[in-house]
Length: 364
Image (spheres, helix red, strand yellow):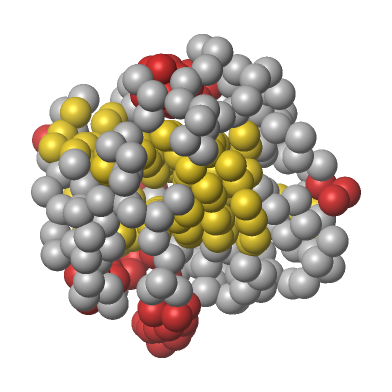
């Protein structure tokens, strides 16, 4: 019996040692290959544009965090407190096919802002989602900006996430004047920083028919921090938004903010989903000067809890995906499309806006 006990503890020790060595080697490789994006990077749009300027007074936009096709309603996720790392190949194929169908059905929308689009990651079976989505829109120009590029994510140890390359993607039929990837300042401390996202946003500018400019920003703010990184990211976005508006530009910021919008009340969710209480405060009502509009649909949630598979009426939900509009833009209609989180842990949001010629700049 003592011999068996010794063998057991010896095997346990070896397993522990191998786990430690595995983590050290993974950390070393990740440090040597750590993605260090510049503060500002010029993006080269791919594909043709149908028009060189915006000729209408109204445009439509859609934003959607597609969850790399790996976070459909049947999935939980270990970062959110669940157990799973990635879906089966069959379930991934099903979810991403559903994403493709939905995007194709909405190819008449003027601007499409996506988050968590993968580029040959292990978690999405090394699919080139950027190319697949681009091919759905042959008359659209597209840009892609990485915010996650890790050679090997070693957690969880029993089933590592492995290689991840992912980011933000914009698609539109209008030709962009400028397209840039802007890094958010600040990050986690080492070694966590080498395995986490390098947060950023895409900023593009488009000519509007009255020779003004639309500044469009696609953002995906931090999720797994104590809120301090998010605060800094919000300050950066505010500074840029106010500066662009001071030039007389129209400004639209959309994305996955990972924080509730001003005025969010979970009791207003009326589609039968369970409204969860977010542990983060709403964005402050006075965060932007008077006249700026936060556009969101208060009746339908945009995000669900990922600690378990989705169950209607039981899984906690909230609103994290929305738009910020400058005072010279009038929100006409906004609607969260209730897909029941079938293909992603986020629902898409569609917005229609109108440019106001008479209101070009305001209180900053």
